[in-house]
Length: 363
Image 1 (tube, rainbow, N blue to C red):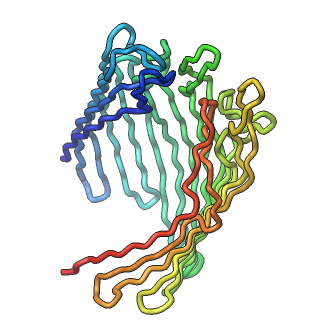
Image 2 (image 1 turned 180 degrees about the horizontal axis):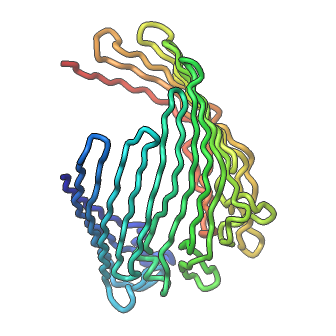
Image 3 (image 1 turned 30 degrees about the vertical axis):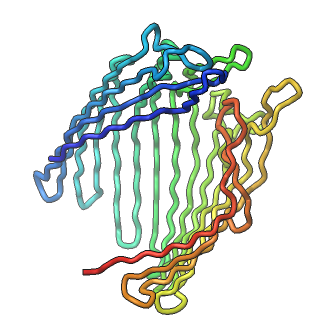
């Protein structure tokens, strides 16, 4: 039996200058309490169940109603409560391992929802396989409800299949296919003419695609390469996420991505650890026309390369020295908004040089 308590307090998007047209200062807090129970009635069976409660509280830090500062209806504060319960059964069987579960959640403003989950996994020698079907539920947040009346919760449905195989003693390969659908997604919009924000439900969005993973492991060298691809064609009905002329791509997110990591032992505790991430073309609001209307532009593929050296047990056991360079080519990856939110891409940090010295005392 495991109890849990969390507390989070935030001041999101805070601008305290009352003369600014973006003035906004509110505090949002969430109190979470839960109790989880795990029980093994048999060595092949595990049962997990529990209950959670969330208390969301928000209030204005300043009663001056200018800029983006708004009341919660006609009040300076608001409160929402959520109660949830869940259960999961795991059965290990010679034919396959079965996981069945469900979660019920009730939000004081938007009602309740039941979401199930089922998975089958199997390991046969060097081969493994997985089939998964699950749903998830997301209730509107405090400002979602405050800015827009009548919002419905989101419901996400995921189907996933995976197969993997150990190729000899040093190599492993796996492929994973997925299909994700979000019904009634809650999406942010900004009206530039009225200088107002709002949220609304669209009919659906989602992606389908696959991921390839290949790993190599030897005593003095390891490496991994991962390739992922998605398409939103015939899945996305949300205009806010759409890229004109490219139905398969969502704003800000590349359809193709490659990630690579490696580690090479050079000499007695000295290792070389390179990594790289390659992003395919992305689309986002990066410019504006003469009237200030945002324009979607294509960003070319970007490769972020990192190099790192590490020396363990330098001079004495437990002493470690590391040095590296992040974003070697100084690509300065830009973080695009996945919707038209009214501000340009956020700049990445560019090339960084890092030196780290650490000592761990071993008993």
